[in-house]
Amino acid sequence: MNVSIAVMNTKGGVGKSTLVLALAETLAAEYKKTVLVIDSDAQASVSSMLMSISSLHRLQSEGLTIVDYLVATVLNGHSAPWSRYVVGNVSDVDDARSVYVMPSDMQLTLFEREVSKGACASACARPTPWRASAATNSSSCSPTWPRPTMPSRWRRR
Ligand SMILES: Nc1ncnc2c1ncn2[C@@H]1O[C@H](COP(=O)(O)OP(=O)(O)OP(=O)(O)O)[C@@H](O)[C@H]1O
Ligand SMILES: [Mg+2]
Image (cartoon, rainbow, N blue to C red; front, side, top):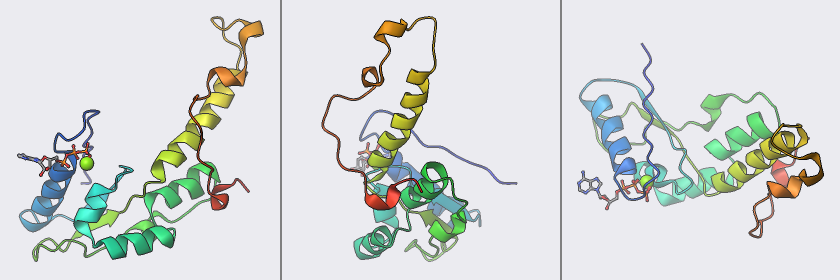
């Protein structure tokens, strides 16, 4: 039976990353489970706990992170094999060799912004009883802070 465990909390510094690492390695080493850690935190803390910084940077520059998977499947609508974005044998605990990770990247924040822009555009285009037509414009949804440029390889094809 497959079990999914989500570790999330809007408060920072409460032990989320530490808990994910401990859970993954304990389940692998003590309970002989195969564990896939999906790092969906733009800080990529768990990824950097599980692999060397140089390995993580290499995967990020080669486009093999959760961001690249989501850009391919969600932004560009391609089918991408998720296993391509998974790395094995990452834990340095001898008995926890069955821990795998889908690493993250800081650009996850940019991806989230791109997705919310699309969701916002369609939500703003839809007439709703509570939105007066004269006041409807897409800028009402736009963040007011300056936006970083979207990487060119993300552009919809
Ligand atoms: N059970 C614990 N007891 C004491 N210290 C802990 C415990 N769990 C985590 N810590 C420490 O608390 C700090 C924050 O932990 P961690 O980075 O896991 O939090 P986080 O919620 O992932 O933070 P962020 O929001 O920045 O991602 C770290 O220094 C970690 O070593
Ligand atoms: Mg964390």
